[in-house]
Structure formats: C-alpha cells, structure tokens
Length: 203
Length: 199
Image (cartoon, rainbow over all chains, first blue to last red; front, top):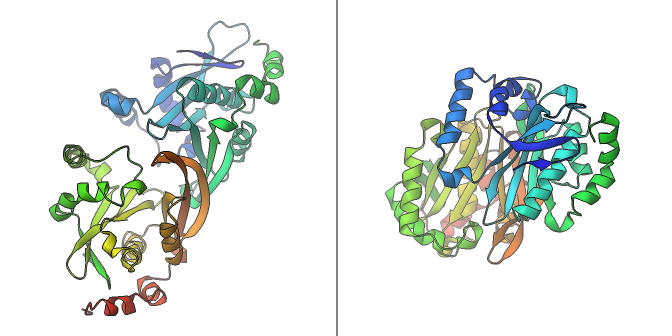
C-alpha cells in the first residue's frame, strides 16, 4: 500500500528503512524518542527479529510506513523517516500516531504535515478508526505547533512525565476525533501544501 | 506485605487468581474496558503469557492482592508500565467485592501503593486513567491528593457508548507520606468502627 502525498509518499516500512533505522534512532531524533542511551547494532537486530516473531494478533496492532520524500527530478524519493499507527485497538477503534522525520535537512518543510494528513485520512477512511491520539514532550514546540495545525486538540498534560535531555519534561497528550476531521483535501488547502510542493518543484 | 489500617497489600497469589474471573465479570466489569465477559480459559491464557514474559518485561508490572483486615480477599492493586528511565508508573486497581466499596478500603490501598512507589521504589511520578463516568473513582483519587491533568475525549467504548477518560498525576514532591494521609482521611476511625484491632 502506498499513500501518495504532495511532498512525500508513505510506503511499506521495508529493508530500505529498517537498515537506516539504527542511525535514525541514534541521530538528532534521539531525544524525542525517549531512549535511554544509544542503540547498539545487536540491540537493533534483536528488535527487528522480535517484530518478525510477534504473533499475528499483536502485529495487527501496528502499521508502520516509511517516508519517501519527493526530490526534484528523481523518480524514487529519499527515505527520511517513518510514520506509524501504534496500539491500534479494534474494540475502542483508536490508535496512537508515532512518527519521526529523522533527517534535519527535511525539517520545517511541511513533510510532517503532509504525512500526518495522509495517515489521519487512512486511519479514519480506510481503517474506520474513530479517534487518533499522540503524545509529545512539553518542550517540543515544533511538534505541538504542527499537530495543532493538523487539527489535533491538546487534551492532557502529564506533569514531568518523562526524563529527557537530563531533566524532567511534561508529556503532552493530543487527540483527534473523526467527527472533527474535515477530510484531507480541505486540510491540504488550509495548510497550503500545494504551494509548498510547487516551490520545491516536486509537483 | 504492605500493612494498612483497613487492609493489607499481599502477594498476588492463587487466592486472587482464582477470584479474578468472577471479579472481572462482576460489578467492576464496566471500568475495565473489556469486550464481553472474561472466560476461565482466557484468564488462564493471560496468566500463562504473563509467566512466559522475559524478566525485563515482568519487572515493569507489580501486582498485589487486597486482603481486608477481616481476612477476606477483596480485590487487587498494582503498578504497571514502570519506567526505570523516567521513574514513573501507572496505578491500576479494582475492588471486586461491592460490600467493601465506600468504606475507605480503596483509599487505604491507594495510600499504601503511593507510599511503596515513592518511598521504596523511589519513583518520581504516578499516573492513572479512569472513565469520566466513574465519579466515585475521581472523588477518591482527588481525596488521596492526585491532580486532574486532562480529559482524553472518547478514549474507550464502554457499555455501548464512548466515554471520556480523565488523566490524573501525583508527583513524589507532592506526597506528604502515608501516616499524614491516613490521619487526613480519618481511616483509623473507619477501621475502629469496623472492629479491626490495631496491630
């Protein structure tokens, strides 16, 4: 399944992404992923194996996409991160959104918004979910601005929820209900993603 | 074993395992967010999965049984998702015997688990989620010193409709200690009224 956006495509999280995931997790994204220390090659390989060994019922709780950023003049985009639905709950019809654009060269360019809109549309229209939620660190203003732009509502602040960057940070919870979702075309227009894509020369 | 004034927190052994299915299908049921009833076979599978977990996973979960001072097993209380890095945990609980609701048992258990989490495990923060419809639980945790931190809309589908969940937190720095809280909530008087003799 490929979800085709304006600035990027969401494609299956295959070896192309798995191979880079170790560097990504140890790179500039590291602090936001709440990892204690660096990931080793063997730890990374264990993690890959564990995912493959999961019983199908548990694997259904996670849908992981790789992000291929469109590049001017190139047919195949650049792998720059991942976007996932986690804790997909078939009873409550909810899921968590987990994501990272790992390459700082691609930050602030609208990629996160484009991917969020694609994934939200997929979750509500294809998976028939009813609620999406996510959690981010209190000092990650960039992420908070971005998800608010995409329609997520700040619902709870877990005071001093995580130890990050050598100190405690709040954990900020966001939620988005399907009845509040105006649909992807409208959101694309509202965020001006067509203009962004034209400027990048990838339309 | 953690000794309170109305009850004790004891190891979660076979006495409590045997009661679990009955409790989960009883009056506590609607607070668990489960789809349908719990079967004995389903419960055994769950216990088996728990036993087969790697040690690192199991260490993130500490469960106690609640034994009232009259000797009756009445429910369970535990810490879940214990994070060694951020030093936080979720509190999960239930009293399966309605005869023991409203008598201060839940509060006594909550104070014991907070004391254990902050003073023994040296956790920095505890959190919990409860249904927005469960006003009894909200009153109880607020009495125990917890702070309402937010409302997560339509988080779970319970008894045929969506329900908000309220998010509570308690920091170690806000915890006055078990003895002070027992005094504040008047739990000793409640214990005496029930004829429980102090150890």
